[in-house]
Length: 299
Image 1 (cartoon, rainbow, N blue to C red):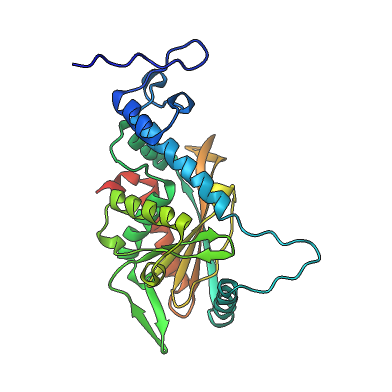
Image 2: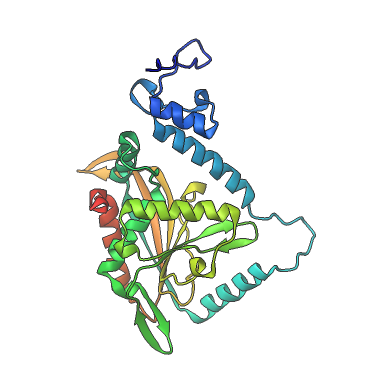
């Protein structure tokens, strides 16, 4: 049998600890393993660390690619076809849809621990993101409050049989809304795989019309930008959109004592023709309950 390869030198005189799977994955991906931070015992580099490093490099290139265009002072730009469509639909939304907004604060300590635990134990092939967790929680909450998964059409309300969640993604000249279909039937892992495929495809373009249409509910997540609170505009003819902000350390009161907790603000924008305030509030409370008890998302 071939003897094991000697440990790599981390560059500071210490030997780098890495699993054989991690070394093989790094070699196949053309990654210098000494640049990868290990999350295993005693800083050991795992295959998951290599996968996450490769994904972060891809996302970095993707973020540069989709960086929104900055206008030059004193200039005039003609609207692209995409921006014309966005302008028309958003103006229609605010003109025709009576928006109202409900905000809730969610304790995210358990969700953070779940995500860290899944990464540390390498339970899944794909790295689970907070957005994946939120999509799964929304699917469960929408299953219990189907009136949120609805549309206003021809002076009537259509409650959709499937939960198709659109996730807003920034591109150079606006936003697109790739759709994860049939979320009511998907596990957290399956949602994560579908989301990773869509993100990878975003960097290359070439979405089919089917992948950009048919959403019955939407999520706009600006947590990665450190945004603490915002409200999103409903995408017609959907009944609602969820605006997700950053997970932040904030002062909280537990058992009468002041403590530091990791919390996240979520704001739902709802169409008042379809949804009344009490239903919107109950839906967000249900969503909050799933996120604060995230083991339910693995069932």
